[in-house]
Image (cartoon, rainbow, N blue to C red; front, side, top):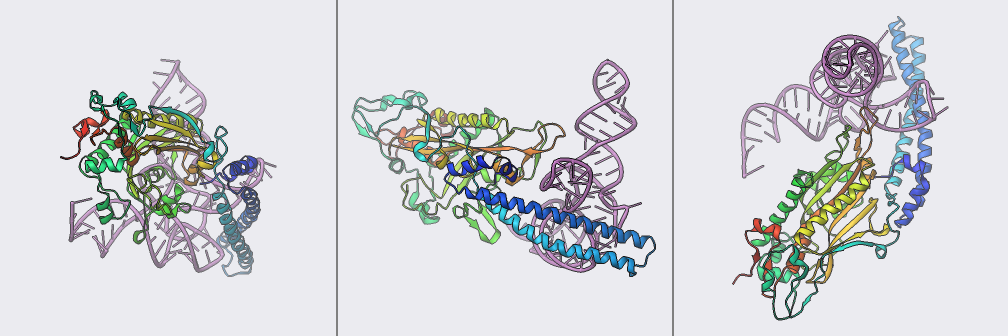
Length: 457
RNA sequence: GGAGAGGUGCCGGAGCGGUCUAUCGGAGCGGUCUUGAAAACCGCAGGGCCUCGCGGCCCCGUGGGUUCGAAUCCCACCCUCUCCGCCA
């Protein structure tokens, strides 16, 4: 996870500005550069000494083979030279190790510069790229119209939309009447923030996962991956979960395993330390996984319902692209996530995140936010990013740009397609009726075996 | 969990203290020949780092150790395979 010394030497000003734009410490660029210079000087001397030692050792072998006594004066002199070089090497190697450790440390704290077309600033500078669908109000007027939801929803559903005025309820109230969440019991058996889905609620989870994966594999050309729910330390380090976000992860200390916070971690690590041959790219994976997040420090925020929980479900898109193709691939991937929301008939907007709101490792990032009319808020359901070569460098994921050519780093991207819990919340709030029923979006009807969920009598 | 075997460059597979600066075969790349292809032959050829370049250094699962010198010897750990045990 770093910009790499190569680029640091070539365009330090770009890296420096990138750090400033993201509100990070730009002085580290100078520090890293100085360490790199020192490292190279040390390396040169160490290499020279090692060459000396190798030559001496080789000569010892030849001298003995030539008939000299192994304990004789000739051999003893050579041996002394080799030992002297060895002592110097030990000192230099120790110093190199120390300098490289510091360099890596500095590099780790230099962010990936944002692409030139990313707005500079904090969250206020986020750009709304586009909005789709009708933003339903919480208060439904008396004349009965279901609005945007109708476009993709069950035909004939509008006639039940009422005559009397009413107010949409937040999703947790809708779910309670439907008896599809078991939040208190989830807290009992695991803890607060570990939701239990019951009946049609469970079916809804299964239907959404299946819908997303089916579209991705059959229409979008993704290869489906069903990854482990835990990863080892090397993988957690590969995508940068440790050391930066260690507090966010659940750790199985006994076996040194980490519960995955997103399928990005296991799936991106699939190709760690590998070289794609010419013509193998792009490689595009879609993967479902449960996602575990401690959400340390988030207590009290969004605690109602299932907006912020410790375990949720998500289908993730992970792309390995050539450097030339990654910019286009990001736009394409965002389009794939949008397509899912449209088919579900959920209003959403696409935000281009500004430098200080996009994260340390992303070069460019879009957020998809779905409209939840029951709470009248935008909910983030997808985050699609291009990391360029920043992640790939740490994981040594490379490709050959031409047959037999030297390997170069790939570009990695990933994006949610989509995160379930908030989509469920949006569905419940968008498609609810005054009687507590919820119409089922078209793509999920076959799987659920009904076009409407009704509260039990 | 127990016993045994093994981890070498893209793959297969030698090497078991000093011409190993890692043999050989296949795949790969370039070339000769050919209308084209195959075959044959010739050449190049793993990954990383330092260097303008010449060239040098490092990597034989990982990390330590012994030695003037380790793929080769010693220790620890990891992984794979076979058998046994246990078990969705």
